[in-house]
Image (cartoon, rainbow, N blue to C red; front, side, top):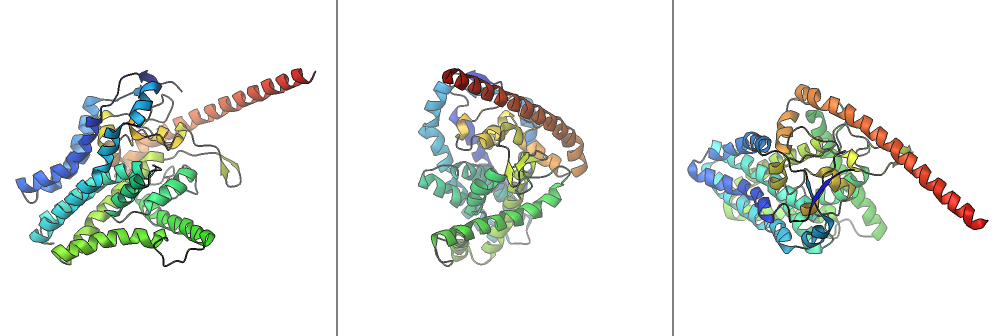
Length: 384
């Protein structure tokens, strides 16, 4: 697959602090007017798509020699690790003022929506990156970040479930051709938790761990949001529980909307009962729009992420042949809300990339037979 490489550090780490405009914007808007945090909807789903369109795409890949330096650069790690305290601070701030304003006010719900948007664009995207790390502290920060909206089970199901079964009918978090967002959401939210429960139940049985144990992630991961809610309730009262659940609902829906747009209609071929072809960049939708990539810690370079799950966000690559989204992630969000429009745009693209994938399979098969033939001839020559 073709790509463009450069030897300088691109993008610079400061670009990823664009994600922090989500909590910062929420705070500033509230002090501008108590109901103004509702404008974060316009920022995320009108302003960012327009900005994406104006700035254009980033089609640059970092050269191998630079990748090694960037891979170990602390500045990129710090940018991720800072997310958890910032999101927790926003949650405390928003809870305080939401309870102060009251549940019947527009401010309460505006703060809930804005906090949920930040939980998605900041906590979930950084958490998604960290749960793929082998360092225990990074993984813990990722899990705790998902806990800010009661979704810590994502850390398990995503890594050992979604990444293994992606773009197959066995994966509850891969959307299917013709499936609307509104059909997908209940299937994935319920299905991903049931998948996590099944994985954890097998692990407990294999290791002989009792169910009621902190080593049971069903229990320990459920405790994370409960601890957050308990602390909020202790300080601001019972109404803080309503606020926490409201912002969590917003975040969960937005996180699963990401799953909807990332794999829509793309399928891996079943090569034997229960066995599928390997994951390639052809099995995930890619988006190279610069602003979305800064805002979401390079998550839109999803094709390379699935083909190479341990590759860190700052060095993810783009491939010319991978399925390309017509708009940035936030623009695709807007499109997904309107199923007829979504299908009009996306279904022809799915058909195009399915055809390309089939051509890739034939080329790969041909290359395999060439290599096997060469190996046979070399072995034959040696035996004579």
